[in-house]
Image 1 (cartoon, rainbow, N blue to C red):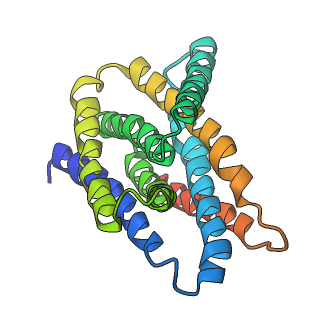
Image 2 (image 1 turned 90 degrees about the vertical axis):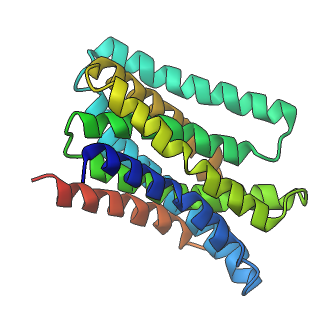
Length: 238
């Protein structure tokens, strides 16, 4: 299988985790009390753990290899500021798609970085693909709940839209593969930009919602999410 085809398939499968998360959210009314509280908070915590592992194990270590200290810090901060600006804008227009926008804001730059990682032969490319899928699953879950709560969009339509958005992953990844393979500094900047934005999202959107009074299982979702990322790193790095 050619590397380019591997890039397309990997990012498309990672993107399909978004409609899969939405499909899981469709069944939350089964055992409503438990699913509405314990499972929902655990899924968000799992997403936070997966996002954090992507930052700590792949994006930041890979990003800082090709950049000096000052540019690396600047791009990381710019990523956080950009996601904050997007968050403020979405809040002002009161859209029911803020989680959807945040999901795409993570997915697209990560896919670009993934395509570039495959182009440079990085050993962590497959790990990054797996981590993108892991984080898209709970993000799809949360974005579906937000859109479905507005009573404007039908469940089948939301899942279909999420499935179509999975195509954006291969498009972004192929762009990174074809045009950034000879630009390690740009790749590093994209990775650190995404890292800063994702870290902002974790503490702005996910972490505050994880805690559930008199329940202690949800934070373990973050531990499990990070553990899976750590396991992937240990399996892929000799």
